[in-house]
Length: 242
Ligand SMILES: Nc1ncnc2c1ncn2[C@@H]1O[C@H](COP(=O)(O)OP(=O)(O)OP(=O)(O)O)[C@@H](O)[C@H]1O
Ligand SMILES: [Mg+2]
Image (cartoon, rainbow, N blue to C red; front, side, top):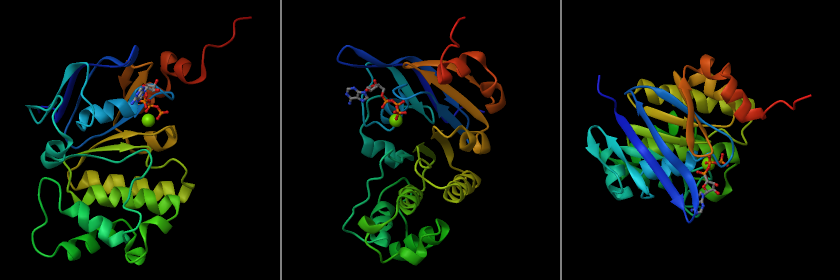
């Protein structure tokens, strides 16, 4: 089967700094693919390029066989590429329901029929229906993360780029969010999932890509990555020589 996403030789320089260097990988449709790496490894930069919020210095992004390199974010969303942000960005003065309604007006399959009804369905799905009339600015961190996912879900994405949706959450909130990701996959969404919490990555991903200093360090099953000496070294550093 052809991959849903193929990135080839992505490089991104910010002034003199290489945030990404020659990164290539493919993602199969229907997978949850983990993307891990220490702070500053280039994970969010990679998401920004795939979501067309940033233009790479070089390299290409192919989505469903179409070249999206350097395209506009609006076109990416229309094609089904949607991202969550590391720091949730709801319309704070709007209600939770209104936030999801607005999102439902974008995406590849614009909701037909009653937008409000669709948005309520999404909120129920995300376990936020009891907060539908609350102002988004008053939500807890856990509920904000769920709202961030609900807003992406309302666009009916084909590819979801999920950036640290579980950071700052309690264990039971994390379980609930991971459950949501699994259910999104069941509905046909392919997911690339960035998270520092390796337990969360191991719980939902079929495959993991490891970035370090902007380069792809390794790629494989979660188990293989967990036991890979170069990955362990990148995370905890070289053991001090005696
Ligand atoms: N807009 C920007 N301008 C200049 N430098 C940037 C910009 N965005 C990211 N960088 C730099 O690029 C490198 C990669 O950053 P990025 O945010 O992609 O890392 P990350 O893997 O997402 O890190 P974290 O785990 O902390 O979220 C870092 O050195 C960062 O400081
Ligand atoms: Mg980041």
